[in-house]
Structures are given as structure tokens and as C-alpha cells.
Image (cartoon, rainbow, N blue to C red):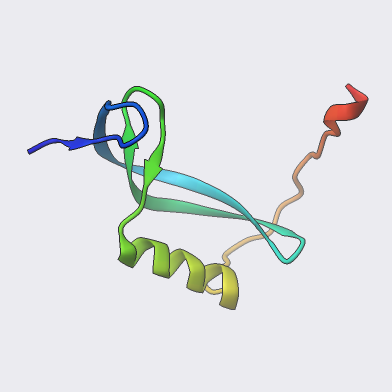
Length: 78
């Protein structure tokens, strides 16, 4: 049975993605995250286990392997 996107009705396929989140004023990039991704609109779904692990990583700063500088643009100035 196919998983269907609740937003557009497209097919959800399992992929490995990169998640970018802001937490307490810091930007975190979490790589190699399993997710269901809609083939039409790109909406992502995470299992309860994955979502819980993401929260733990952000809260406890676990699994941080490297830090890097990231360019930041201001939309209002462009």
C-alpha cells in the first residue's frame, strides 16, 4: 500500500534527507535523517522514533561532529 501525502495526494517515498533547524538561536544541520518525502510537493514526514531522536539531538547537542561557518543573507536588504 502506498503512503499518500495529506497535503497534495502525492506519493510518499522513503529517502535520507538533511534537516536544518533553529534551536535557541543556533542553526543545526542534521544529516542522514530517514524521512518520507512527497514526490509532488516535497512535504516531509518523520516517524515518531525519528522525530524523537531529532528532538534529543537538538536538545542535548548529541552527535555534533563538526562546526562550520554558514553565510546568512537578509531578505529585506536584497
